[in-house]
Length: 125
Image: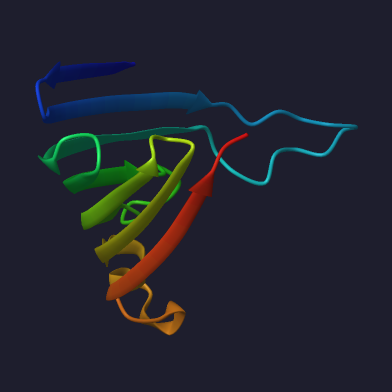
């Protein structure tokens, strides 16, 4: 399910997902996992500083895979988007900070909080 609100230079987008997963026996082999429910949501807000050219954005995401007691992941993103030719050609740079309940409960998989800087170019044709 998703919703989008656009008022002038301001955008607000929200999405929610939920999936029920049931294990099944295949060729007499029982499933390797119990039934579980995955759920998550994201909220994104953007504002054009220069109309249709330069946008700042922020996003909050949560995902609970539901396979283990502590397996949620959360992140906050700050981004800048430069629209060179509308959505057909744009540059995007994001800073993302992520928290991982799974990694906190299982430190052998790495740090439970980490940062990323991601740059992208979008070309549509």
